[in-house]
Length: 259
Ligand code: CAA
Image: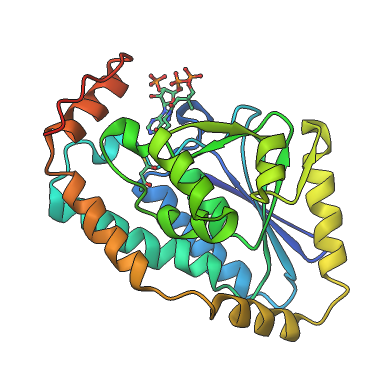
């Protein structure tokens, strides 16, 4: 029996619900949460009784506000690359390639690693209060959990470049118009809507769904993800990275010198 410190797990009507539960840190993904998510997804995927998994965040403010900046701000290039490599392997690639369909119910901020977790999920539904973006370059780093690849795959290179380079957040309606999410509902309807979608998926063959996930994913090569890991690590060698993460903690605008 697994004990989770940062997750709540429910199992109801053949639906597994994982709630990331670090609301004071806006559900930021620290190492422990990533390890726990790995275990939770792996275990629920093994359960024959679980046909669909819903992932969401606790509280009304955030789905996940990103990787935990406080945890990695003093990392060097090697540790940065290792963070991206391990995270991608044990969580983001795992979710994308899971046989059991995964629905991300985006209840609030989905930023950086948070949006990347939603992007790795098979279906995304958002509350109309949700805000999404990859703000990493405002910290002097780049998305490292597959965001440079999956965002472009899902919304197209032009929109992805705009969002990534401007570090902008978009609201749920814009995300819907981009095809980043497929449904937007009022916050109080979010879990019910995700639940109904899960029940709809459950009418179909689980074997065929697992094969379909594999077939859809087969279109995308892994080369870009390798480049992303390398460049994520490279960003950790810059003075801009030190300044960007320090400015976040000090709640001020960073002064980037481009070095
Ligand atoms: N990591 C660590 N802590 C975080 C966090 C993060 N990603 N996001 C929020 N928090 C913490 C804040 O530091 C704050 O903690 P304290 O109360 O101890 O100071 C708490 O959560 C509440 O956050 P705020 O006070 O900042 O809340 P706000 O309403 O003023 O702002 C926000 C909300 C706009 C989401 C803001 O918190 C924010 O910009 N967060 C960071 C978003 C971000 O840059 N994400 C990308 C992370 S890097 C990444 O994900 C790399 C990767 O791809 C691998």
